[in-house]
Image (tube, rainbow, N blue to C red; front, side, top):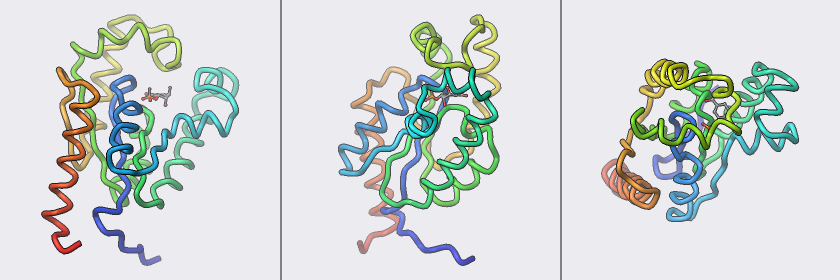
Length: 185
Ligand code: S3P
């Protein structure tokens, strides 16, 4: 099937990165600045199951969560002009990586371990993947996951930056890229 051409400036933006790096908060801020709709895929999964991720993992298992995650992201990638935040485990699935990278602009929010570990305690309750893990286990998971986010179109290191600074940087970078690559729009 021939893929529809989508102008760069109409492509949806996907934010990836480890859990708790701020994909949702930053995504909402970017969406507001660009007058776009924001979609959080974890929220979509939660709506589909009518329960939060921790409960989905307990009741139906991680496999069911990942299946729904793939279905939702694959469908969303066909929409234009959205700002989409995907869960930190989504890019573990090759099919998700491929569909996101081929149809949307993928931006990696890269927060270093030194900064991330300060947030760990407030994340555990709502993140089933962190439950039952000590600091060493979490570091291992963090290091294992980091390479999967290296498949992206652009990245921003968010250490030392607040939400506004990151979202301003992203909006400016996107506008610059749109003007360079699609100067006549
Ligand atoms: C997960 C990350 C979570 C959520 C689920 C699994 C993961 O999303 O999708 O708890 O495996 O890294 P956030 O990255 O938004 O926390």
